[in-house]
Image 1 (cartoon, rainbow, N blue to C red):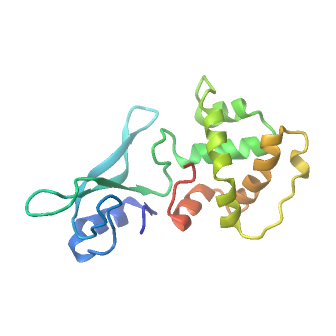
Image 2 (spheres, one colour; image 1 turned 180 degrees about the vertical axis):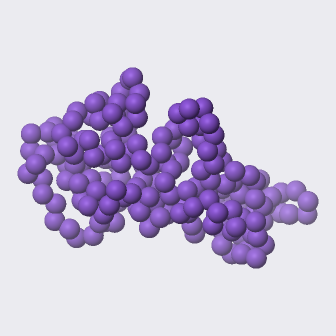
Image 3 (cartoon, rainbow, N blue to C red; image 1 turned 90 degrees about the vertical axis):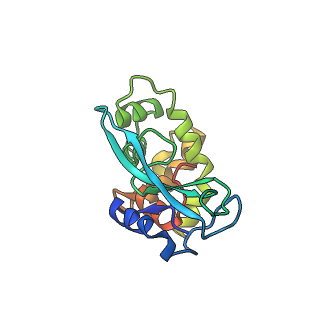
Length: 186
């Protein structure tokens, strides 16, 4: 089941004709697959106050002779971070600046432009919870922990794996979400 898409047009075209793909999506609550109806776009507020479409909602319809449960399913673009204010580009910048040697607070402020770094540790905790999944996704690649020997224990464990992620390319968050069909920060 695809939750992440490369562009909004492919996502929109799929949701316009859901009846042609009855088995494409399955409701997580009622397990039905043929009751979904397109329920509109999902927007995120940008830094200048403008809204940007970042996905669409599907509604497991329980009206008009449909027998769904009423739950919604969110489909997102791969370059967004579900349930977070910032986009994948800010998270990638955070990781690159951390690898370059900055403190966690400085990396967060540099990536997001925020005055406070209180959410930086939340990002780091979410990354640490996904560490095993990142290593599985990367396969059997040897990581070099030597450049991170002077960092705290938490970063000594996390940064070698994140450094391997960055070798995939600048858009490693989008690549991960497209390949694994789950959020980079979970």
